[in-house]
Length: 171
Ligand SMILES: [Zn+2]
Ligand SMILES: [Zn+2]
Image (cartoon, rainbow, N blue to C red):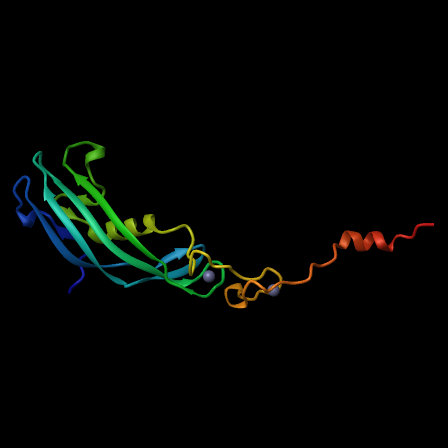
């Protein structure tokens, strides 16, 4: 399937109240997350687009797809690929005022790739982690605590302030 960047709504020739469904493929750009690059999997994502012509003119649009970001877990640095589902809607009624005009529609053209990439960024969790209960790295020795297990621990270091106190001599 070829990738869709811009989708022509005008050529559909829908009559008011009529709707159609399209299965398309859209390119997803890699993301920058805290200075780290994350690829999106798949880079070419299957997207379902529902288009309906509204009675008052214009279109209502629904966008659905699922994709994952792939890169190092922000806690343990292992490979992470958390999946995100997107279900977005836009309404575009020319001349309907700011609330009824979609930023992704220009004339009769839907900027589908831009909408898909924006919607994906907004739907992402704030952190990329390998699993919800990732234990991260040991703050003392840096070992991966998911592998080391719960018995991994270190003897507490003596507090340096007490060490200083012990050096004081009392007569
Ligand atoms: Zn992790
Ligand atoms: Zn440790």
